[in-house]
Every structure is written in structure tokens, then in C-alpha cells.
Length: 224
Image 1 (cartoon, rainbow, N blue to C red):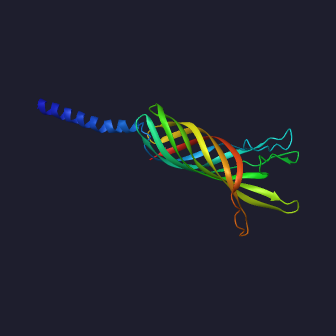
Image 2 (cartoon, rainbow, N blue to C red):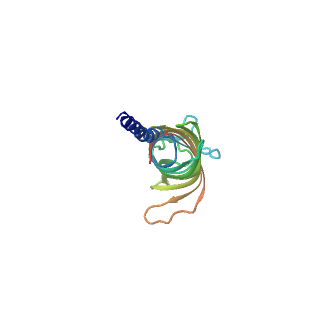
Image 3 (cartoon, one colour):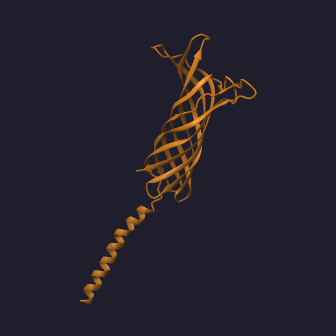
């Protein structure tokens, strides 16, 4: 009888360990592999590039800033200490031209408000700790700006679609198995653009621009 009880106790202990071990591994999972979605918010600054002198007065600011918000998605693969992945974003912004005593702070374009921004790119990072990833990123961005134009008599608003590139760096922290948070800085430069007119007027030919964009963003997300 004692041998039977000992055997049952041993079997029960083995079964308990077998069940708890995967559960413990799941709760302390530090892998960054898999698809994810995230919500993004932060500070957006739009300025003329280095080739543009847009200051209309000694006191005018030369930037349009505001609140950035949007969503992102991507897929990462964890190679151990190194993580590689692809990602995309759709964001919008409240940044717009301000006025200083009637003069527009125009950052090279005139009366402008920032609109949607599309981004697709890649990132590479290394683990500073099992659940902490430091990373850099880069890719293509297409930004839309609403521009109010005038010939001195009539005014009309058009959309300006600008193509450019983006570089950034940040830190990602895992919380539990699936949730994470990010803090990131990124710089974008736009060098080509086209004007999208209303009332079935064809888009303009592409022309050169020089626009800089600085963003500091935070994100929270879920990895599947």
C-alpha cells in the first residue's frame, strides 16, 4: 500500500511540474517574435529644410507643430540577441501654420496644416535586457499637407503629397507575454511633392521641396 501511495504521489508531482512549467515559460516569455498592432501618439514638428529660408520676420517661428496620433502594425523575428522586423504606420497630425502679427510662420510652404502620413519600413534591434529592446528604424514616408494658396484675389486649398525617407531610434519594453510600450524619436525629410487639385483638375507634375519633420512618439501595443 505504501508503495502505491508513493507511486501516486510521484506521478502527481511529475504531472504538476509538467503542467506548471509551460505556464511559467509562457508568463515569462521574452521573445519578440510575431505580428503586433500598436496605438501611437506624440509630438510632431514640421519645418523647412536646410535649403529653405522661410523666416518672414525676426520674431516669427519657423515651424508648425502639433499632436500626432495613429496606428501601426508589423512583424518581428527574434534571433536571440538581435531582432529584425518590418512595420507600417498610418498617422494624422494637428500641426498647422500659426500667425505672428498677421505674418504666417510658413516653414517654406505658406498657410499649411499637416494631414495623414503613411510609412513603411524596417527595424533592427538588440536586447539590452531579456525584455528590453533598443532599435533603429528606417523606410519610406508619404505625407499629405493641406496648403491654402491665393493669387491675391481668390483663395483655394489644395493637398500637397510629399515623398521622403525616415530614420528613427527607440526603446521597446515588454510587459508580460503580449503587451509592450515604446518610446521613439524619428526624423523625416521630404524632397519630392505633387499638388492634388480639386474639381477633377489633374495633379501637378512632381517638383522639388525640402521639408524636415521631427517626431517624438510613445506607443502601446499587443503582440500576437
